[in-house]
Structures are given as C-alpha cells and as structure tokens.
Amino acid sequence: MDSSTTRTIPPTDAFRDEWLALQLPYPAPDANKYSRGKLFAFAGSEAYPGAALLAADAALISGAGYVQVVTEKSVVPLVIAHRPSLVATDSSSWTAERFQESRKAKPCAYLVGSGFDPNDPAARRRVFDVLAYAKAPVLIDGGGLAFLTSLDAKSLLESRGRQGYPTVLTPHAGEAARLSAYYAGNDEALAQKLVSEFRATIVLKGPVTYVCDGENAYRMDKGTSALAKAGTGDVLAGMIGAFLAQGIEPFTACALGCRIHAQAGREAAAKRTAICVTAEDVIEAIPEAIRVVRLFAERTISC
Image (cartoon, rainbow, N blue to C red):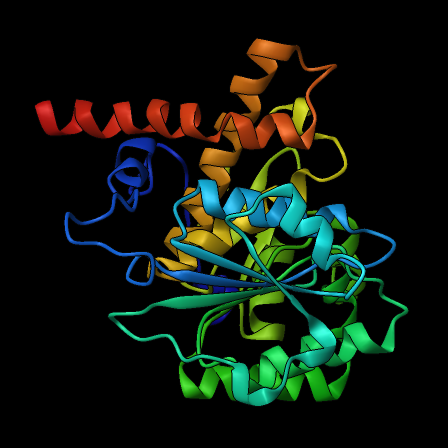
C-alpha cells in the first residue's frame, strides 16, 4: 500500500493500551514448550557476545516456550553458563536443513542480527540464509540491517513477501537513514517509506517509536530516556521475537513489544533512577511491565 494511504493510529485509538493488553499471549491450560513458540536467535559475535544473552533472556521472559541461540563458537559456553534454560548452537554447524517451518501447533520465529559485525562476511551469510530458508516470521535487528541494501537482499525480501512470510526490521534513526536515502524530517514518513522499500513491518526506534506495516501506523510515545543505554535494543528485539514466535501477527507483536518495553523502562527507572538503568534492569522489569499493562485489559473487561 502506498504510504499516502497509511492510517496513523495514536495510542488512544484502536491500538490503545487496553486493546494491546488484551493481546498478551497468556498460555493455554494444555500448553507445552513447543505450542508456546520457539524463537531461533541468530545473535552475538566475538565482539558483541552480550547481545545474544540480552535478546535471548528477554525472549524467554516475554513468553517464548523455547529459545535456541545460534551464535559463534566462542559465545556458546557464555550462553549456556548465563542461563541453563537456553539452548546454544555453534552457527558454523548450522545448515539449511535445520530451519524449521512455523506451524499452528508448533509456531516459531527467527531473530537475526543483534550483535552482528556489519563487516563480517559470515554474518552476511547468516542473514541471507535466514531470509532464504526460514518459513516463518523473521525479525532483523542491529548489525544484520547493514546487509539489506543490496539487490540480492531485496530480492529475498520480495520473495518472502510473495510467499506470505512476514519480515520485521527494527532500525534506530541512524540505521534507518542508512537503509534509505529518503528522509523528509518526519520519522513516521520514513517508517512508511521503509515498508514499501523492504516489504517489511518497520519498528523505527527513538524517543517516539513508530510501528508501520503499510496499512496501520502506531505511534508509541511512552518511552523514557532511561532506555538510552547499550543493549536495550537487543532486549526489544528479543521481546518482539518472542511475541512473533507465539503466533501474534507482526504489527500487533511489534506494537505490544514496544509498549511493554517502554513500560519496563519506566518500571526500572522508578526502582533504579533514569541514570542507573541498564539493559539487564529492563529485562528484570518485564514481568512488572506486563502486570501493569494487563491492568488495562482488566479495566476494559470489567466495564
């Protein structure tokens, strides 16, 4: 859809807090770890191993039933030692046959790029492999975004779109500017432009975050400067990836992830002050953020 026809939906309209709260993926009574969704997180590098830990932690706490981190060999023991409930795999042993298709009984999603080195050819191959072989929602974040401007990458994104496999991109303003030469001083317009260029749902991160899929645009203005710390973007990627893995459609997963991430930042700042908050504090605050957002749904149901 042309960006001129995109509807902007402020937080007080159809995607207000009460509506988003009703989308929280509480598990069914007969749920198991596979029915709750599996996230494959292609993340981390020797230079940035922490990105894999932050994204995977956030995904588990945001409800994914199973998180498998695919990363460099040197990072694997760090992941396992950090949280034994995570599964870690050496990326050099990963083959095309290991990609799983998302199914109703066993939904899954892929996160790729958090903590990637944009100058690493192996990282580029991993991004392209995920785009080519993942028959499931894919979220591209961080260093992985740097590989998307080539014609080969855009061809893969076009192919995914034709086959009905959704893709999500989560750039901050600097990454978005590198993805597109278009910029009119309006972040919402830039987000809409990126949707049409990359056939993807866009999460344009900033003091005000915009989520756009070509039909709807959500303006999320409940963030806090406490989130202006290294690693908080990896946390958001893990949260949205978890919601995608649990079968939530991309636009809603992105809006919900951004809203809870913002609330977690506020909860962490209330406890630690905006000066002291770290990405780890934001992860720790996710459960309280979910409880706060859940109150909006309970208020709606009781009315």
